[in-house]
Image 1 (cartoon, rainbow, N blue to C red):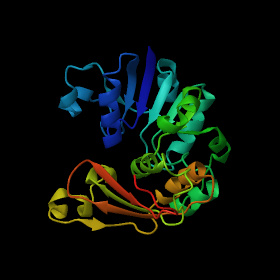
Image 2 (cartoon, helix red, strand yellow; image 1 turned 135 degrees about the vertical axis):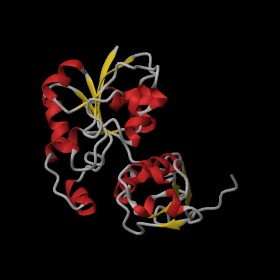
Image 3 (cartoon, rainbow, N blue to C red; image 1 turned 180 degrees about the vertical axis):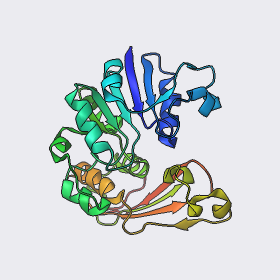
Image 4 (cartoon, rainbow, N blue to C red; image 1 turned 60 degrees about the vertical axis):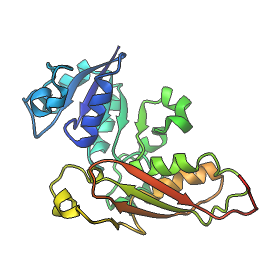
Length: 257
């Protein structure tokens, strides 16, 4: 049995993670943290979890306490906030799955350019395994730090992985159009992302400089075996969850199937 701690468990990613881990026969969720709901039970904050593990209570982050109870940690924190936490947990000998963007990009200069903050744990980037099991399953099994991929990149990378290494794909013409529900913006209250404001609207945003672009290009370059630049256009759909990605590219030779 693996004893797991979830730091930042009250956000949308934390809730989804809880629903998966609480149903996993080899996992015991031993600690959940939240600054907002400290001291409140999981089932009281989220009634959907009532009866699944009623003893779980949101707590503040006390590393001296939670590292004694957990073997593995999942970090559901905003980018930049994960860096010092990852370092602290790795020093304690723990396995860490980071759901932020802090360790997805191998080049710290690329991260700093696209996220506008200094990467304070550059030495750990080489140890992070990009967490797509379809591509890096063997490495993930033995990793101490797994950088969980972004939502848009996952849909794009898995969509193109079977053909990116083929000679008939024109790597200079890839266009990715993705559609996402509004939960991807997180729980912070912002008028632009309220369903009442979005109802009846559908629009592109963040192009051509959405932060997931370099993550997609990094993995496409690895799969293609050559530098690959893409046109990535995300769109916001007036629904809570869901994602749909359409990828187009030119062919260098005629194909019938």
